[in-house]
Image (cartoon, rainbow, N blue to C red; front, side, top):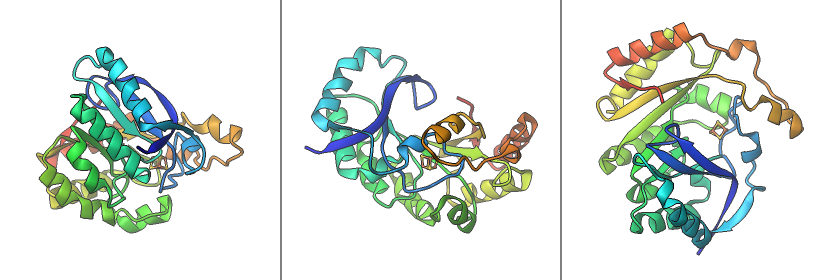
Length: 243
Ligand code: SF4
């Protein structure tokens, strides 16, 4: 069996999928979002290595804690960067009846191979324009849009998340563009969407790691703007949630 590199793990209630969940943060990301709150998880080197069997045993021993529909969530970094270990872990959990979820930026084509082992999919959609997405995060998200037909065929619950960042995607016009995109991709009626206002939780970590935090005051967004964007997305046919 494979090994997985993990930089953080712990329990979380409600924000990383349904119920109370054991959350593994996998090392390495294929994007470089300047607002990333987990800079320690970006490089593919680093993290602590675990045997997949060891993680399955840990999850089984934690099963009494998975109340209110909980289970195990794999997030990052980006889970699709360690696909073999992730497939082994997810299928090992599925056969033991443990609820599985991942949170992904959706960009890697290998995401489609994980779907049969999933009960719940959380996916970030950071921008409606692939070129702006590429310029700011390092990769286009056209491949995310290309993954959508397979995700819709899979048929499980989808929770989309938009990090709302001033100067990047934070306006009523952006909300309208997201709404049109979701309609075009067939996501209305098939997915919830949550707007996550920019925060600075990761800022101090950058200094500790000797990295430069590039975000300034202009990235902050008002609650009024979030409410207005939520309303526009509702009018476009999306179910808007807050966790
Ligand atoms: S996709 Fe997520 S983990 Fe990767 S750089 Fe962006 S915010 Fe950070």
